[in-house]
Length: 93
Image (cartoon, rainbow, N blue to C red; front, side):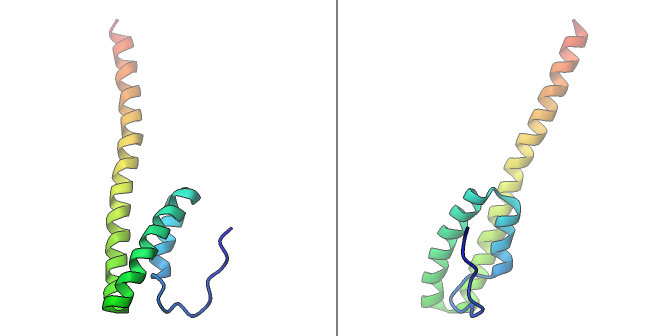
């Protein structure tokens, strides 16, 4: 389990954006994505400041979750329609 973060969030990504990954992904997947984004966030934070780093992180979080949602939708609807098509083919015979 990941230890809780200190109350001082200076230099750390926005917690709400990070939470979205933990809410929607498996723990191992969320930890991997959050870890990669956090590394990059810290570099941007040091070089450009908190505001730009936060904007970058939110952008990454939202675009990543859009792609994750689209991939999930393809899997779910693909299975749904593949099953539907197979049922119709068996009825036609």
